[in-house]
Image (cartoon, rainbow, N blue to C red):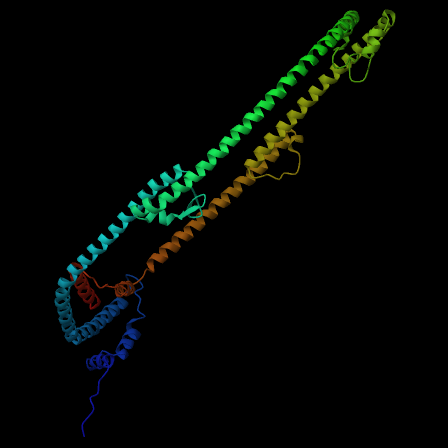
Length: 442
């Protein structure tokens, strides 16, 4: 009875080989229990130092043994890998020697096809510009993707892409024929229009002639009437001027007498202030000399008294305004000083304080502000000291070398080596794979 071949998984083979040399998980756990908790307290802690040194040597012995066992176990696998890599390079280089010239020919052909297409499109664009100029000269319009003239219409693509013989024999003659028909219609319409305009001009000229004759007759009648009215106006104006001159002389005479009591003679004819009215303009020029003299004397005294009272009032208002401004400036100055020391909501009016009260208040505010600033500075210095101490402790608890090494190996395992097409980069990729394997085997 034949025995079946038992295939042992690679992980199990590796574990069995390590067990033979007493490199087991139990041994590692024992090492961790014995030495993993050790911490040297300081330069005086020599006893712990000796234990740490002993533990490090024992760990190294097991680590070196494990490394040698694993290196020996993968010698055959490394040799097989190198053989595969060499054979891969040999075969791919032979195929590339055939593939690369084919690829060059393929790319050259595709480039030539693309160039031919681009040249054809360029020629068609130039051809379209020239043909469009010809059509525009005939009044052809472009609308909705087509060139249109009367009953003839051709799509843009047909005008643009048609061969020269088709353009000259089929498309252009149709446009020319339609152009000639449209032009003939336009010429006929223009002739009819000109005849109509000529008749309209004749009728307009006849109408203008009759209108001028009528206007001339009306002008002669108007001149006669205006002459009569002018003579009447001159007579009326002469009388009015004489009366106006008399009133003006009277007015200016009385205005000169009223000016000293504030009568400006323009905005308020008989007003020397906002409350007393001497007389209206009409009353003033109609007033006899005796009445005018009496009114003038009464108001001379009134104006003088009013002027004195107004001046006293004006001076009092000036003094009052100066005092208000002084108090406002004092209040603003003192509030600015309080704001400098952090007081922006003082509820009392500091302008009412005498000098002694103000000096006392300012001294108290300044003392409180300086004390607050001192406490703030001390708090900031204490916070800075705590932050510096925290940074120092964090640096002492920096990452271990083993963690740094594992992180670097993780980054290396994430590196992907792509398949290259050219022989130059295939060789570089193969060398890179070998170097990565050597690094991973450390």
